Amino acid sequence: MDTILYIIAGPLFLISIAGYLYVKFRLQPKEDSDLDDYYYEFEDQHPAFARYTKWSRITFTAAVIATLLLFLALVI
Image 1 (cartoon, rainbow, N blue to C red):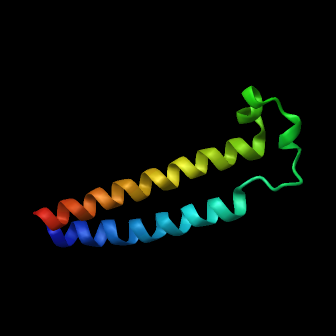
Image 2: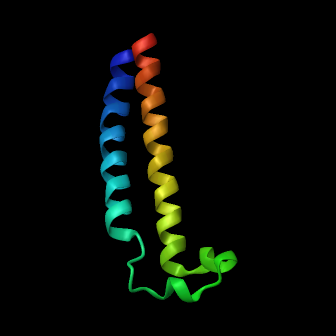
Image 3: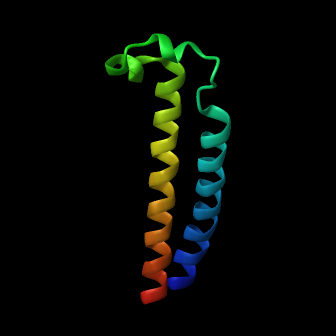
């Protein structure tokens, strides 16, 4: 059982951390974007910022789930 969890959680953790770093460095809106023109209450409606926020949450959640699976495999 723990071997299966290691096989699933290990690559999931590595892929999600790599994806999270990619999102943080490549998808983050640049300094020259028109994001500053948006009022702060509506900045989440900006397409680039919405995509960045969505993928940031997805990859961080995957990393947390993989970490919990690795911990579960360690405890079992």
